View (tube, rainbow, N blue to C red):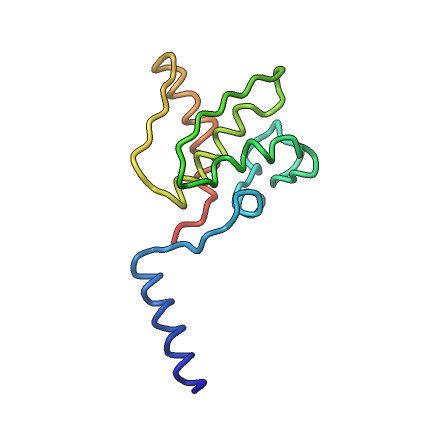
Length: 129
């Protein structure tokens, strides 16, 4: 009987690996594990620690509801993490619900700058299956 369970586990793992299926994780633990701030010279730490900014947790959790499309409007003072909320949520969804995505920027220059300074450094540290 133990051999049959082992074979089932091996088959499940083989299927998961073949299709690059990543087991689901809630957003906050996934972000704390996979988002590296090591390349960000302005960051006081190398990884996320939501005990320091717990007000972002409810906003970020809206990204893990895969069954509904939501519009979230975030208005806050400067330098509080508004951009981080959409960047982290976008990266999370890119892993767990890959699809075509569109980010609209007011200009091409701003798009290039944001992609190079915000998205690409974070994406480079996320493990790929």
